[in-house]
Each structure stands twice: as structure tokens, then as C-alpha cells.
Amino acid sequence: MEFEGVVYKILPATKGTSARGEWQRQEVIFELPQEFSRKICVIFFNKESDVARLREGATYTVSVNIESREFNGKWYTDVRAWRVQPKQEEAAAPAMPDMPPFAEEPAYAAPAAPMAEVDDLPF
Image (tube, rainbow, N blue to C red):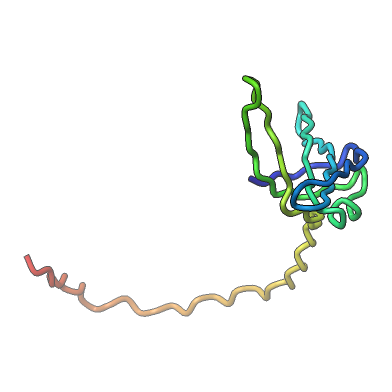
């Protein structure tokens, strides 16, 4: 899934060690620019370099995976980012040069006799 949002707040990183080694998890709150703006908390797992490039107030296109899991009868949902790109400002299209005026079409002589209609259909 992909969305475009403005970085609202970058939360502090959480670090730890598991059986697989050290890990870092950081949450970033994005605000979706709509009539009724919504906020989404996105998790960056072991992506310190991606978070370091983010700036509060800047707009980004974020690609995420959404996953829910159950623990002790309660469900928890993670929104994990896997790609973040700064919003590309739409470059203004280069101005088209003025077109020369169209020349008048040559007048063709009307056919002397109407052409017979050819029926070339196979049925």
C-alpha cells in the first residue's frame, strides 16, 4: 500500500537485542492532507538511514505493509514502512511554442459522377 503524507512528528528510537541480534524500531507520525486530516503511525524497523532523511513538515510518498496479529485475545496492527521517497514536485511543462496558422486547405474538384458503393462483405 502506498500513501502521501506530511511528517507530523518523529518519535525517539527504541533499541533492543534479540536472538537474531540488535534491532532498532522508530515510529513516525504522518498526517494525510485531506479535508479531515488523519494521522498514521508508521514503524521503521532497522531503517535508521531512512528516518534520518525525514524532516518534519515535508511531504513524502510512503510504501507500507499492514499486518495485524493477536496476542492474549487482543489484536494489534503494525504499519511498517519499506520505502520512503520525497514527493516529487511536478515540474511545470515546458511552454509549447506558438504554432503557425493553418494554411487553407486546397479546394478539390467535386467528382463528376457519384462513386458506386462497393460491397466487399463476404456474406
